[in-house]
Length: 283
Image 1 (cartoon, rainbow, N blue to C red):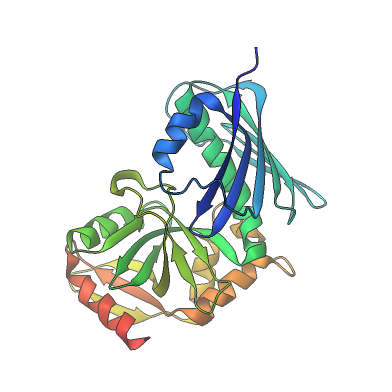
Image 2 (image 1 turned 135 degrees about the horizontal axis):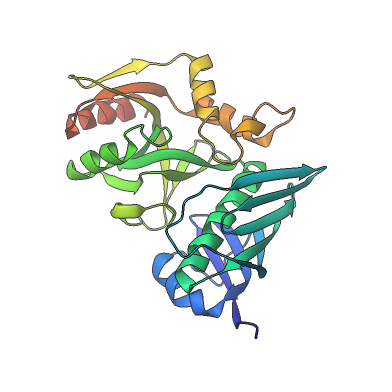
């Protein structure tokens, strides 16, 4: 017996997504998790159709063990523990085939598959998903770039204790299509901090972390900055070297539009005055 479905539109701070065939028994969860982002009038740049795959999810915690990307011309298929997403590159039309399970597992499975597709499709529009923790200080957004173990959660927690607005401690939505790169409010990977709600903040700086006894900022060479940024775009970072890669254009826009620094910090919020001064210097 087939499940009832609903149509949903979401506006992630200017990034519109249309979800067709969304399971109705997951609607309460998505309205709770995406509160402030669901918008029936959203103009989508990505159109997603959700269908059952016929497979079954592991009922335990998500392990993220399976990630297989298959390319055939312009066709992309990404298989994960939660199911399969497939699309023509640059088309904005995505098919999600989601394994069966309880509503919570299916919802988070759909989100993971959706994010993988968005990671491929957003750069065409000058946007991207980046592994980074994000905060807003005095109206300027700062991203601490790095994968697991880079200290992102600790940094965001310390910044929040010092009065900063947390954006995420793991995955940031960004847009480089305007005059200045911006970090966007989203409901993705918000973990303990909660969503900041819809919003856009100009990037004050991109940061790489180091731990030490004194808070300080240091210059980062353009070559090193480009390499380290390129390694922190999930699902698509290896495509950055392709000829005409839209993601390469996003990275170039980030490096042209925002300073890049190494931030050395200890376990307190004493780095915040450095970020405020850096933001003021770029006004």
